[in-house]
Length: 86
Image (cartoon, rainbow, N blue to C red; front, side, top):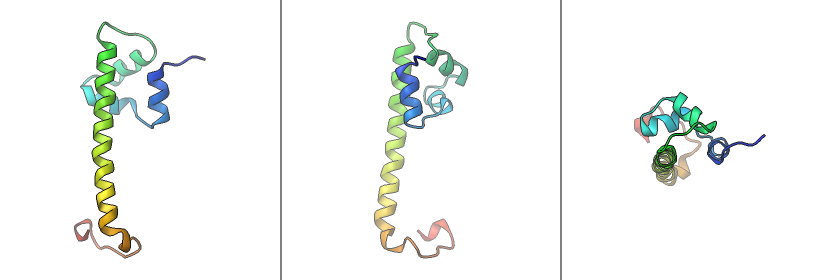
């Protein structure tokens, strides 16, 4: 069965339909329809923007994780009462 590159990338990288939909303020059904091959004139542009937005958001979260890890690498097994302690 052939699938779109969009669906392949989405599944491979654990991107949800909701994540893409939220990125460009459309419905999950719209994303699903495009993924299944039902497209309009601006579908490609919209999907590019959705993926770029998801990549940007994930990049920010990754950078935060990296900084938090670096700041706490020697305390990974310490007990922490609250998130504020970090």
